[in-house]
Structure formats: structure tokens, C-alpha cells
Length: 329
Ligand code: SF4
Image (cartoon, rainbow, N blue to C red):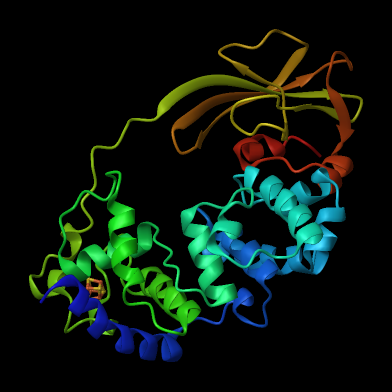
């Protein structure tokens, strides 16, 4: 059976399964194009469980693009706290400014040109919010399709996404958004990445080539992974009279975020060291191996000095620094 036939046959059972088995998630209730954009940006590289509560909080605080456009960047970052990848929050705010001024774009090209929106998010938003037949192909969808076809293409290769996206586009039904969400849901709760996929609960059990061969785990095929760069660093929690030093990071990772003073390699001596601890934070391509030091000192230098309450209320400290936040009290 060729790929197209397999997909066509898979469409109806997938939709039927989705209507029956889908999870009740906060962003699946009443929605607007703006709310779909918010949820899709939040869900990029972030687990559903981590997004749930924060999505509700964010939509209460910024229910419309106009409300978000009117907020300061610091307010938006604070509300994004805990979700990581903060450039998404900044982009979302800039996108809200455009939407507030010009209205929500009605085409794939228009949505794709919003800040922070790549091919995947544009496909998801256009199909779910606007009903357009635009596939959204991410790692989850690649996994389920390569299993369905027992397709050994290296999915890290340029062109792999495009190939599967073109295939999907040919079978998209009228209820485009539902189909997009059904594919995502299958990848999230049945055809899962780690451990054995739950083929017994899968609407494609009788159709799936990998399952028929008993080789579900052989797909998808990846290229060689690049090793992450290791950065040894020192993070100082400088305490002076009940306030703590923060710096706004000027470049590189976590640019524009507030964090504790960060030094690649060793840090200069600024006072008496009261505690030391090691922590690690893993980014996509880099790992920070950090030695954190709690240091009693006097206020000085270019830092912003804030009390524990102010830090809690006003500044979004990225999770990379969370291991050292326990010293702030
Ligand atoms: S039958 Fe198994 S491997 Fe195939 S799509 Fe379903 S869950 Fe994935």
C-alpha cells in the first residue's frame, strides 16, 4: 500500500478516535485565533502539563491581543515565568502589537510572517484557528508518520519535514483543525516517543507498517546528534543588606532576562562566600555547568539590587538559575 492510500484510509479512524479519546485541555475550549496563537507558542518545546496552568493565567491576564500589546515586556516575561525559551514571550508580544493594529492575518503567509512563528506554528494556527488545510509537521507528527509508513528517511535531513507536509496536505479534510489536533494528540498520548508506543489503543493498529513488522521502535530514524557545548561558569548570588544583585543579560542565551551575575570560568572575589553548590542546566545546544556561590557583600557596580519580595513579584528569573534561588529569602 502506498503512503497516500495509507493516509487516506487512516483519516476517518483517526478523527473518530480523537473525538472519543482526546484530553480536555484548557486551550481546547472556546477559542479565538489569538488564543490559538498563544497556546501554540507556549506548547513549542514545552510539556502540556507545564503549559496548562500558565496558559490559563496568561489568558486571564492578557485575554486579547490588545491587552498583550499594551503590557510592558517585563510584565509579559513575568507571566511567562517557568515556561522557558523566553524569546517566545517577546515575539508573542510583538505579534500582538501587529494583530492589535492590523487584525489577525487570514492566510498562511500572513501568519507565518508574525514574529516567532515558524512553519509548524503557522500550519497549526491556520488549520485550528482559520480552518485552512495547512499541515503542521513537528517531531511528533514525523514520528507517527514514519512509523505508519515504516519509512527509514533520516528525519533530521533537510527536506524531510517538507516531504511529509506535502503528503499530508493532499489528504487534509474540511475539518482541518480537528485533523491537525488529532495527529498531535496521537503523537502525544498513544504513539509516544520513549518506551513502547501503545499500539493496542491506536486507531492505526491495523494500518501501521512499523507495527505489522514489530519494529515500532526503529522509527523515526535520526542522523548523528551533535554533542552539546559545555560551558563551565560561576554564578554569584550577591547579598547586601537584604537585597540581591541581578543583571539583565545582554547577549547570548537568555538575552534580555534578569539573572544572577554570571561569569564564564571563575568569578572575581566580591566578599565573603557563605555557601557553594553545583548545578547544571541543559539548553538545546549548550550545557551550563555552574558553581553557584552565595556571597555577603556591599552594594556596588552595575547591578540592580532587589529584595526577595521584589524578585518574586517583578522579575522572571529563568529556570537555569533556579537552583540558586533558594538562597534568596
Ligand atoms: S500502531 Fe503503534 S507504532 Fe503504529 S502509529 Fe499506532 S501507536 Fe504508532
